[in-house]
Image 1 (cartoon, rainbow, N blue to C red):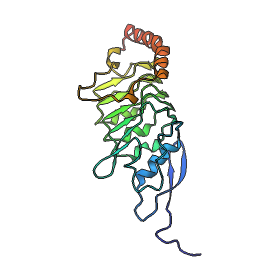
Image 2: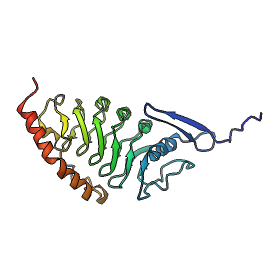
Image 3: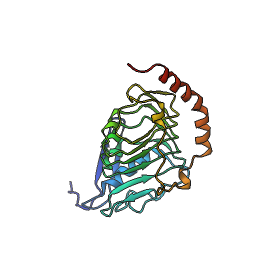
Length: 235
């Protein structure tokens, strides 16, 4: 049997707790595995608007891809896809984007549990997955994010307690099944602190009609949940 040359395409098996995928890594002796991880994320998402169309497994790096921003060292630091009508699930392989500082997926239709692997993104400063369809409990691993400054989980279908978090701004409003037992604070804690004046809000990040409808549908339940929580303080 002939021995494969170094230039032969390499194969990488990515195994996670929820799924495994067999992918072809980029050609060459030093493939960019951030390309592989991003392609795994793409493969679990439905993209009716084609915003991920130029994400290509054969790319040398992902730095010229839509929605991706890199550092001067060509490492992925931002993934910004607000209001892009994405659906599907968020892949646990997100944990491998170890230089990620911003993850913005608000105002989409993404479902499933929040991957616990998000808690391994040590450089993450801002996480916004509001106005989606995430369900289940907020993973306790999120409490490990020491760099996190802003966390918006509002208007999903999350449940259970809120872990003690280091984020300066936390928003979980619009999740009627959320419990406040571990927050140590009242429901006002869920209101987001206004962004600084030098921060720009892109048109894509504004709430869509779907998001507004979803918010209206859960607002009453959220208010009732807050009243119940405040009426029965945790001893």
